[in-house]
Amino acid sequence: MFERSKKDDDSLESQDAKRTASDTTLGSLRSKVAGRGGDAAVIGRSIQINGDLRGGEDLRIEGDVSGTVELKNSALTIGKEGKVKADVYARSIAVDGETKGDLYATERVSVHVNARVQGNIIAPKVSIEEGAHFKGSIEMDPAAVEKALGKTAANGVDKPIAGHRSGNAVDTKAVPKKPAKDARTNLNPPAGTV
Amino acid sequence: MTKVTASLRRASRPLPPDSPAALHAPLFQDLLAGLDTTGRYVILDLGAASTAMLALLGRSRCRVEIADLAHFGGIDHLNTAAPGPALADAAESLLPNRLPDDAIDLVFCWDLPNYLTLDALSALMGAIGRRVRPGALAHALIFYAGRDMKQHPGRFVPTADGQLIDLSAPGAMIAAPRYSPEDLGRSMGGFLIDRARLLGNGMQEFLLRLGS
Image 1 (spheres, chains in turn cyan, purple):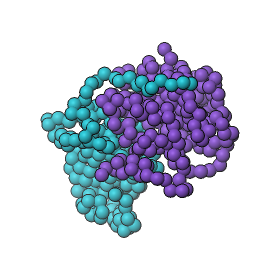
Image 2: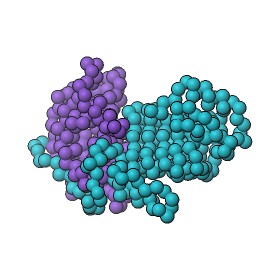
Image 3: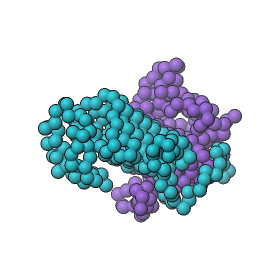
Image 4: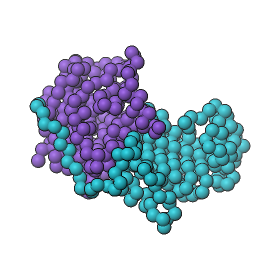
């Protein structure tokens, strides 16, 4: 779905070549990224950012970013050349490159083939393609996800869409209306012989 | 259709002739069948993350800890650490932090124990034993009948009906340690053999339970 064409690569390289190190504000990084859902700001592969990065528009990272990334109502794509060492907060996060840090998304986290992700994922929907490398935890309990994301009207983050289930929802009919119980459930597979 | 659903359907289709055969692992299937859809579980997976596995576990209210020891250098780290404190520290460093309110219920070891020395296995399972709740279960696949195994651990992915497919690339073979149940009894950090089955490919499937 998010595979980048060679045309996109050429376009990004061309943009990178024209960009100087001072062009690191999101507004000045706006560029057209074909096939990625229209306009998105781009942090090119020659750019390094240390510190907190905040914004209200979609962003694609091909460079190095350390610190914190907050795009609470927008989509973040970490491209194949992108290296992010930060906790990331966004509406959706797609990873083709490398991340170290926790990924918080109010909608979805997608880890694509050949991506390397170390950290925890907290999102209502998570997909990890075969061939991706992930180390960390994935919270798939809706109540725990909501708690972690702090989904309240007060902080301006959208409520989860009805019927969405944390983790990898296969059958939304099976989603309990409310968490049935917080107590741990014992695993008792049928007895057998050794 | 969600990506996960698509993945599961692909996994349950008849396999092309050059695909690895699906492995019928009855204890693995029993484990999955025992997961209550409304229950809360914390699961430690020592192997690689797979969407199909997450989809199966996602039927319950799970938190899944993925260690991926094979890819992130954990096997070499353990096998080369000096016995004693250094080995214990190595094992601790490979595992998630201990959370007192969220102890681990279930551990998927896959075939990783075959790639660890008994000292390394003992250190790893001992560290895991300090993170699990009483009565926790562990699942493992041990090369038993065959003398050889792949040079690197498998990448096991479940089909929709709970069979396993090893997606790892074919490569060089090495001698399998062929650990006995007695070896495992001494090296699984307090996990005791609960059930065992000899599988069609010559592997022994073990379900272990943490002793009190």
